[in-house]
Image 1: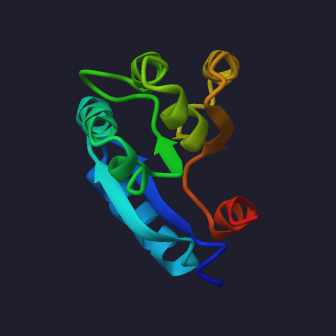
Image 2 (image 1 turned 90 degrees about the vertical axis):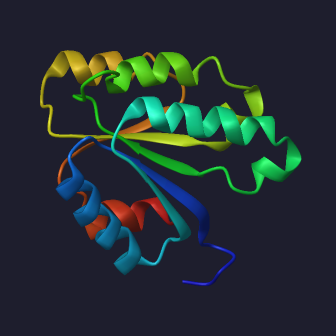
Length: 137
């Protein structure tokens, strides 16, 4: 993939370290980005994004273009993350595409995710090369 098609950064948010590791390896193999930020909790991920915003224009260059977000996590779940994400700047919300990456097959979760404009897709785990190829377009 040419560097112009490659995303600058991708973020993984999942409390399951093994899932994060597997997904990181899948993303690396697909060669779709230059940087992968991994968070094992939604709270640290939202703090990371808030800190990037404080950097202004400089921070924009390190924002993740795609955020893979798990739903079922302790302390702050995926939907609580989305509520906090909605409070971020318009620039951040426009730039970051969120993809729910979850083992939940609950139709209520799918429907609830559609209520957030920042959520662009809902993918069931595991992340596959086919899913990643669709993102590269």
